[in-house]
Structure formats: structure tokens, C-alpha cells
Length: 150
Image (cartoon, rainbow, N blue to C red; front, side, top):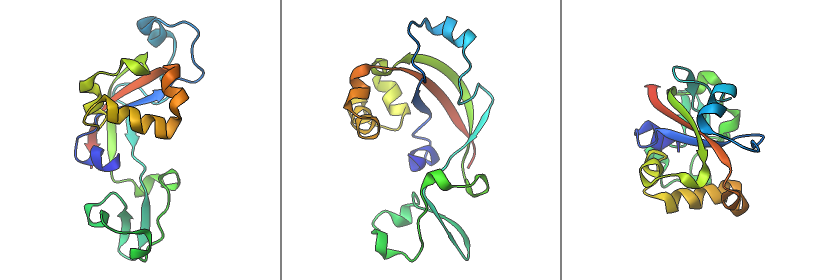
């Protein structure tokens, strides 16, 4: 999804609220519970798969690596979770935060998530979180953002 952010196709993300509230009313919940991912105006940095070379940091999402297999390059790719802040090339600014049920995603929001439609969003969501997560229809944080620095 780093490329989708870099290309300004992804301007929104959803994260499951943990722990799930028993009963929720969106605006009341937002007044009493702070989103752990930030509030409008806060900045986030994007972590992505990367490698370090003599010339600097190389990003796996770069178009030049589209057709490369793992053994095609001499760099050792590191998972995004291990990316230090200094290596990040994209900084985001949160523009809005809201709460909704996962399955309430609209076609427009699926596009803002970087997908052509809700079906494609569902497919990746279930790969990452499991089909039971979709069926459970959890409450999610919907975090909207814009690229502040690329």
C-alpha cells in the first residue's frame, strides 16, 4: 500500500478498535475515547519494505522492482515493521478520524483505501485479518490523511 500512498491513491486506512466496545454511539465514543493512531493535525510516518545499500535506502515498492524476484537483487529486504523513522520517505498528516463498522465501508471509501471497489478491499482484509474478522463486523477507526511530505 506504500505505492498507493505515494501515488495519492490511498488517503484512508481502517484499524480495528481494541478492545471492541460493547455498545457504541460514534460521536459519544469519539468524545470519550482517543484514537491511538492520532488526531487531525498529527503526523504519521509510513513504514515499508526496504534495504540499505551504499547509495542509501532502497524501497521495495519502487516501480523498478515490480518484476524482480527475491533473488534478482543483491540487497537484503527488511520487513516494514523494522523500518526506522530516519529511513521513511513518506510522512502523512491526519485530516479526520471517525468510528464505524467495518462492513459499512462505501465504494468511495474503498477507493480511498487504495482499492478499485469494496470486493477488493474485502479480499485483502480477509487475507490479513481472517474471514472471521470480516464476519464479526468489528468497530474500526477510520483515519483519513494526506501526504505531508514525500
